[in-house]
Image (cartoon, one colour):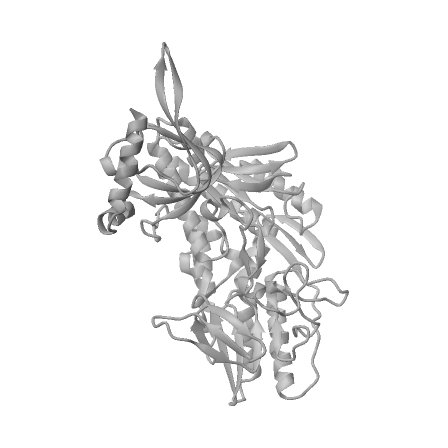
Length: 538
């Protein structure tokens, strides 16, 4: 029995397994295994429409077991690949036992991941936009911000943060996200009595001088005009540098700029999956697997790679763009070439130039390049919907999406906030110099452990008719703060501000209470710190 292992649940991996099923349907001596994180695949071009609820939450995904009838689907993460012994090691399920699979042919297509390494605060405070969970989290975050802004009327700075929405990245994904987000938030804002639509600020940050650099300049300019007309603020020439829980820090031509926000979405940067980094296979400078025209990984006859994780050469030598239309055709070629290898026939090389590019701008507008012809406006939007509807896997999904689009013409968008993540536990938070962690007099809701950087503890006191800050202490790595208010069930008795860029471990009140009550000596240790600091604060 020959075993073909496919890694990846995106367009490349799923369509490769699908093509292998068709190509090898008459061979009973071949087994196809697919390993992926979820039991569904996401139709990425329509993912942004989940934000506004234009289509149903599950209409943008397709269950793998309905698409793949012969493939054995494993909803498990692949932890490592042993090329020499032709095995893969898979993450444990309910039982922590070893799970090692032998393969005869390996197809690697895990795609890319959003990589925030080297960008302070982004892992903690920025929302990625790669899968269905990301889209649902963003939709809930936006609705939550509107709900809070409708209540918070006494703090103008907090209202600005809540009503400012920042999207970083001016490629297709970023433009489609900001267009849907802008249309949605401005449309539903009229339902909130204490929110003035003029307070809403939607910002698109892009490092280049124009958005949609993948398309012709005139289409990028058209997209910019449409977005600006609809109220989107374009910050071109700016790059997302860092983030805190209250702001996005941008690097621009004139230095750093801080945009106050509670909702930051980053569609960049994307990097190869960590599984690719761990492999000793030949790679290009950008970290993608080096393959030849047949999609074989250099130096290996039974290892294939495709999609975003591979640098696939075209006939003129340039790498293929990371688009769905290229990935699905690479998937078909991989299946053809694996079948040819098993039958000892010659292999074919990849030769596909692309049919065009399309991007939605929301509210019946889009831009498109089809066979070299530039189209914009309503016609491009109609083509966008028609072509992508036809490409969706399964008639059931197509009917559901077409019905949702039709109803959207007559019905108001849904405004239900889904809090799927629970209350949350300890998290990392990032603060920039000068930023306040909490103010004197606020209610205590968290305790903080300083991991890197420095903070100052100050208290307001009167000097004649003025109020001045009295420095009480300077804190460094390893020290904690915020515990006094929690242990004594009292308001904060001092203000803590960031001196040097710092990272803290933030523990909510409930989790801290459980630890203090159940870990021997922990409460006593914190009470000693509290008593020592109480002497300083008197």
